[in-house]
Amino acid sequence: EVKFNHSIDTIQAVARAGQRWVLISDGKIINAERHAAGGFARGHVSIKTAGRILIIDFQNENLLARFDDGEIVASVSDLITLVEQDSAEPLATEIIKYGYRVSGLVLPAPERLTTPQALRYIGLKAF
Figure 1 (cartoon, rainbow, N blue to C red):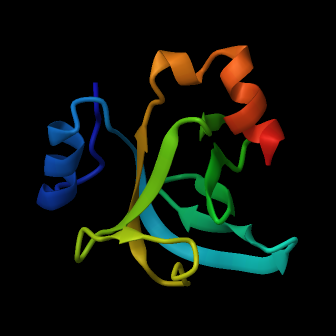
Figure 2 (cartoon, rainbow, N blue to C red):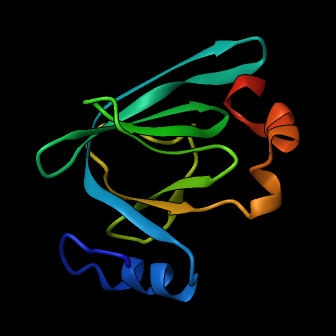
């Protein structure tokens, strides 16, 4: 069951309409670090949430969502996205910056994309 920290009607509607979307956290971006390596934009974004920091690591796309205490919330092959709260627009990794108020959403991967064979190509170790 999806739990909402506060009422953000548009983002709640997206989570509900998606049937499987899960809202993992709301908060404010307090740090965004990126660098180019091997032709990819790599880095992480830190989001201050109620009580914890959510960290999202990326390589062009969001790869891993984890809290600062080590709890892993989601990883590829799940679809992890940040949505700007005021506009409800998804944020690409190259435009994320300090100060945005965001909601983190996860669409769990279909079962066939979570098999060991699939994860060899699209799991964290593939990146």
